[in-house]
Each structure stands twice: as C-alpha cells, then as structure tokens.
Amino acid sequence: MRRYEVKGPCPELGVVLARLALEVPAGETAVLVSKWRYVVEDVRNSAQLLGIEVLSVSEGPDGVEVVVRRAKT
Image (cartoon, rainbow, N blue to C red):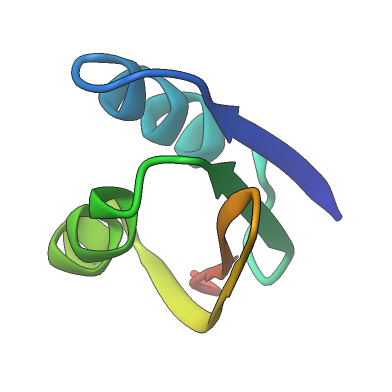
C-alpha cells in the first residue's frame, strides 16, 4: 500500500491527489496521512472525480489517515 503525506494546506493536497491518481494502479489501495483534518472532507468531495473510493478514515493524536482505493476500470 502506498503512503502519501499531505504536509501543508492547499495546494499541497491537490498535488498529492494528482500523484495518487497517476501512481496507484486500478484496484489498489493507498493511504493519505495529514495533520490537517480538512483533508478528509476534501478527499471525499473529490473522490468521484479522481476515480477513487474512500474506504476508511481514522484519527489519532498525529492527525488523520484516509484509506482509499482506485476504481477498477
């Protein structure tokens, strides 16, 4: 599973999501990690456009982890 870290606010998330969309093969999962909680809603809002599905969201003392899967084409 690939791991992507969102280190700062916009436009960092957009760059990370673009990389994820290009690098993760269809049907594979990846995890986005960030200390920025807004990342969860932004990923959910853009998931369909990027062809990804949000599988789970967890929050810990260091931030949030969003597990996503690329849609099979």
